[in-house]
Length: 363
Image 1: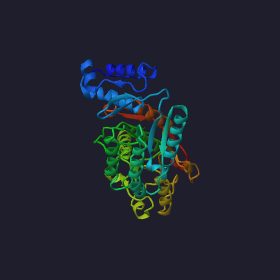
Image 2 (image 1 turned 45 degrees about the vertical axis):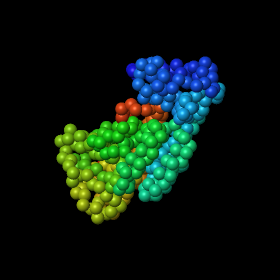
Image 3 (image 1 turned 180 degrees about the vertical axis):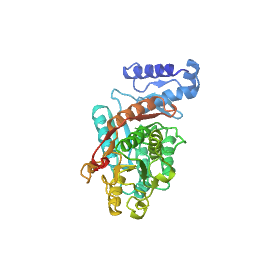
Image 4 (image 1 turned 120 degrees about the vertical axis):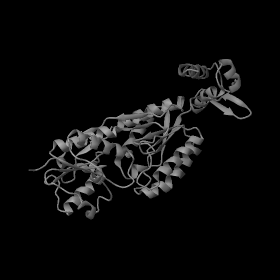
């Protein structure tokens, strides 16, 4: 059965229910009967009925059949927001606000338990209980920004997705996949074009006079970091600048011993950090080890945190397209409600470089 025929059948049933041709309590043909009538497989008919059930128009009851439950007032879709990073990063709070704006415009509701904690381990221990609450609330779908910064984040992220899979609840991932490249999950991922962001920021440092580039990130960071590193490596290659494993620094940015191992060539070195919070600590640690930002070394981050403007020097950063991420995620969810088993899709959105004092050498 073609995709268009499935959509046409969905539309026909939906319209017949909404305009009263199939009134409240109407018993629909069994999946077997409809499959025979349409000359399609039963799983295809099941997809159609499941989609209409998620919209609150009908109900499938084992042993009793499928009946229309729409009685003139359409049920609002309820979606769960799982944004465990909101305790550490401002961007997930902003993402939540954009979802609320959609809630006010549409006939739907978003559930969110707020910023779980600013500690990654506490977030890990809490997230499963939140998932169980969302299941009790019978959410129509879930928007999930996968857990990071813990050693078994991938395991927990898989557990989260499996819980919703068991109930045929679609999941749209925000910012990153639950697996590291080259592995890929079956869920759509909406986020920043991290390769392009890595390239643009590195090229900015090179154009500012850097001939030596380091990339710094904390252990167990989001797997999107690796795409930024790939973009960084590509920009260095194009500029004929050496960049290898020894130039990728993983650890605590507050560790001055680690920071002192960086070979800073005064006036020619740039440190690209995974995010603004890492960059802020790197700047302080460099100062403690005798390297001054703008005089000896340039530093840049990602995410455009508010405090970046008031750091000394002010921090160059990369702004994420948060509004576009939310609207694209919502559109993807609507598509998944109709066709839950579509192949995995990546939507990579373009952000913007915000140049400030931390990437200008003061010769």
